[in-house]
Length: 142
Image (cartoon, rainbow, N blue to C red; front, top):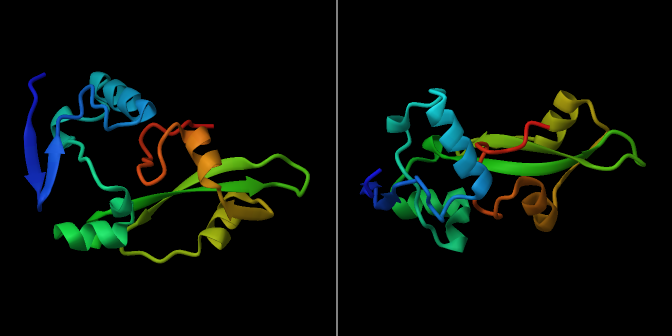
């Protein structure tokens, strides 16, 4: 596929095919989804390279003239079914303009006794993605 560059607001978007900007699980999932017809490739606008401090949606959107309602954040938590059980990871996709009680929502939804934000090192190890660049696309189903 030919290289391309486009923009939304002032965010430059590059072709996602073979991109070094995407974590391998994301690239693998997008490739599979498009080849199996799950996602129309024309609906994938591209991938952007962002500064580390722009991983915060509250900074990124205003800086680039984007609406928070069109953005989202992936939050990785770890859960405990009991105090002695090893933690399990869960991801929550939160709309950029929403404020959510993740602890209560995740505890209730997954029926666990304790939920904590996963430490960055644990979240990156569990997802194969970098902090600030986590995506719901490419997460392990288990």
